[in-house]
Amino acid sequence: MAHNGNKMSIVDNSYIKNALTNEQVSKLIEIYIGANSYISDSMKKLTSKNHNMEEVYEVLRGSDIIDVDRIAVCHFYCHDSPYYPHTDFHSIEKENLVLPLKVMDGPNPFLIIFDQYYNGDGRTWTFNKNLEFDFNKTAKCRPCDFGNDIHGLLEQDISEDLYNYLNHFPKKYWYGLSGTAYEFKPGNAIQFDSKKIHSTSRMYCKEKLGLTIRYSF
Ligand SMILES: [Fe+2]
Image (cartoon, rainbow, N blue to C red; front, side, top):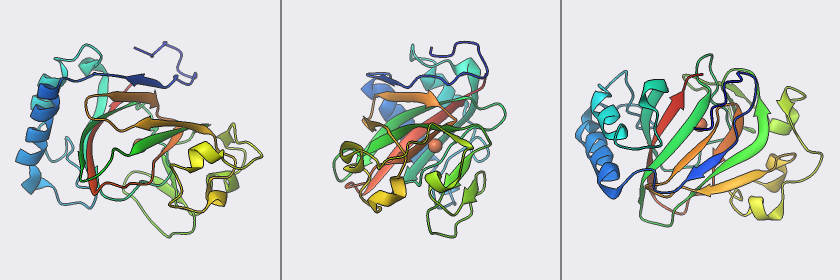
């Protein structure tokens, strides 16, 4: 487990191959599909608010890399367009663990985890769009316009390599950011600090389904 006991430090990213077996992935998809009629919001989220997660935890207990006792938040999410850059940190939520479950009709997308982080509560940078979300405050600007509250901003364009994953927006939107692209591959897991800015790559698939876990301290 990447958790090191120091509340202020930023947890290193880790990409864990074969975190779940095919059977565990199938079982989780089955739970999501079985509960589908309860899902009303646009992100098609299934959370502990609209579903008893105990059957999910039971599957997760079968994986060596998941610390079920430390889960603060756990939800399924399914979407067909990329998420804007955002952070997920809220008081007790310290680390994200993303478990890709299914990619529909196309190649696997990527999760881009930037090196830059924000110590405040979860935030979404919506560029030039007026958007509001339930849990995250939005900022109608680029991360680089947000000022010194974002740690590690660079005074340079995003690299050509990373922009290849993010070219659904103009290059200048990503100014000042650097980071790593992790394949959203069912069965693998992506663990990272909730304070780190992250976003979905351009999606060439129709839809993707994942399970997000947030660990407490
Ligand atoms: Fe997130």
